[in-house]
Image (cartoon, rainbow, N blue to C red):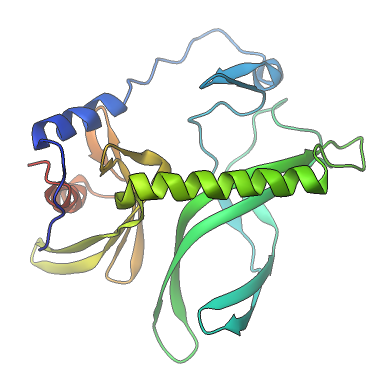
Length: 247
């Protein structure tokens, strides 16, 4: 299998991956005021914010929605998508914003598809979303004007272009092809852009044999994929480490 050539020494790369995963602190027995924690001011890279803490995740299930797309040039399509998404699980009591709150997001994503038959395709998306504005439940106006939102989007796109030019590996899928327990596996691991550090991506969305497996993550205990046998995870991660020249 082809491998990328990295500019730094493999040993240093491996150290970068190891340092990226921080131990998870044990949960305190003291009962927390969830609402107070959610609304408390926090700081990330000098920016103050409220709401969900950076580093935490959501998992959603989407209802049967309607995706419409129109081809406007040989390589460009315009799309609309409307659906209700539902939390996988339940929100902690007292957490989150009031009912009626709105958000305006801008999404940048890879969409990988493969035709299965005349009418069906596999679909996998990995990307980023950026908040341009929000609307409080008690107000009818957005937190930023149309002009301010447009300027913010331009700033985001320019910054992303600079980032990808500096670190092109963030957009390069890792090909997978191996045999595990006498079964042949072929697929791809798509980097989660925000997880890439100095040429090594520490989270990758994995599809094998036309089925979505999950997100491969590097943790303090090594590579893991939720609800996936560790033997299969080890086989996948070996290919990823070979690709990034970490062996």
